[in-house]
Image 1 (cartoon, rainbow, N blue to C red):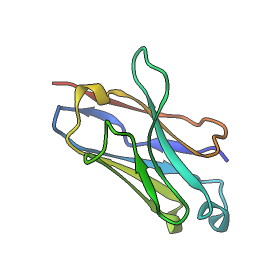
Image 2: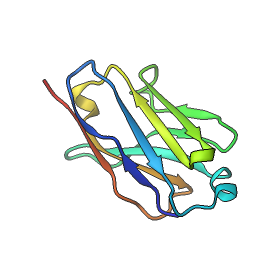
Image 3: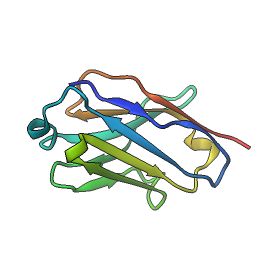
Image 4: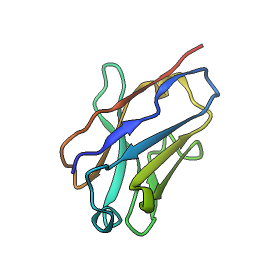
Length: 115
């Protein structure tokens, strides 16, 4: 299944954004069984894992975003969210979401943190 990320934009350092990851073609009963991860790829960098949420709600975070980002899911809407607070310029990247293990990459959403 291909997931689609949205919600990016331009924000000042210290600001917040909420990203959404949608699976419009997924069947509800199948979606709720997915483990889903957020990744990002900044300028000149490789794609890196940012946060993940299991089907049972277990979460994990990269050290660089712990305490600032929160991942959550709403299975009834077939969506996963990434709440990003206290954003830093180094958070600037294209953000993607994907199932675990990694499937096809969908469109990402660009987050730019700049004053």
